[in-house]
Amino acid sequence: MLFCIFSAINAQEKKTDSDSLRTNLKEKGIVVDGKIEKKDVNPLAPSRAAFYSAILPGLGQIYNRRYWKVPIVYGALGTGVYAYLYNDDLYDRFRSAFKRRRAGFTDDEFYDVNSSGIVPGSPDLSDEALQDAQERYQRDRDLALLITIGLYAFNIIDANVDAHLQQFNVDDDLSLDIKPYLEYHPITSDPNYGLALTIKF
Image 1 (cartoon, rainbow, N blue to C red):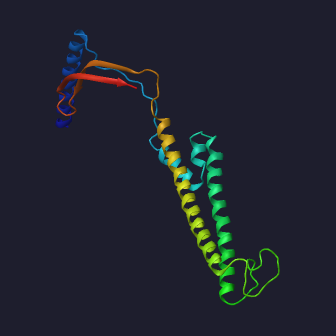
Image 2 (tube, one colour):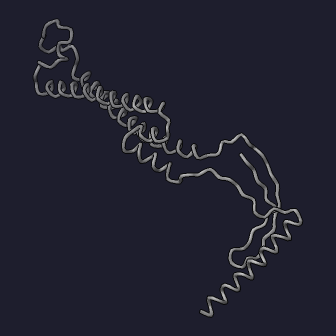
Image 3 (cartoon, helix red, strand yellow):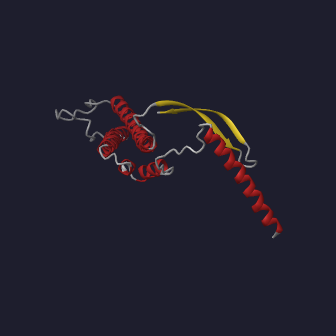
């Protein structure tokens, strides 16, 4: 109990000292308590927007109220998925024909492309052409998959960066302000004097 009373008296003395210091500084024209109004910032907004875009592409853009970006996201991802499926279908067709040709069959769809009649031993597309086409469409399919994954990642990054930029101060008030600076040490309550250079942008 004695400790509590002593602590209260000590705190009162420090408060009185700091109040008298503030009064002396105010008399000299130095402002001690300058209030700066800050816009409320949600520190979790960027991560939440990124999470939403990871769950469902475009949802992070909706969370950021950038509705015009949603068709772009789905157009880009849809194009990537379409390119993947298109190349995968052609790859499967050429691969099946190549396998049948190697097995000795002549009934694949590329043996008589021109409908000029099946002539044994002279297919319209040779085995080498089938193999080249198969490899090309496999490469294009894999590239389309990588591009689609990249676009998906870009969708997440865009939502995150956009949420960060919404919290950025883009006020028209660009100024440079030089003021005397006073800060109290949190433990000893000793004042630290200085010069504050404030840049508003």
